[in-house]
Length: 113
Image (tube, rainbow, N blue to C red):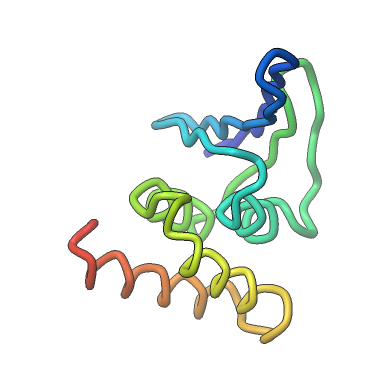
């Protein structure tokens, strides 16, 4: 699977949002969300990124695919959960498997999956 991150700008409404497209679905959100930061870190960090007219693209592995599937279920407005995920990725030194398990557990507990 390949994921492509595309930014959209609106000078009329002064916002920046983004759309992440994969072969199966799209994820749209404000770029100022914790979810955006978590997706950048989880899926794009330390990988070779190609940039073209469609945005930034990266090849996804199975962990990325599962993370994006779950990220689609958990809305960006659940900012406390996304902030916790960012802390796990940035400052707590958790690996991607632990982050994925946390997100999977949250989605099951909330009845999202």
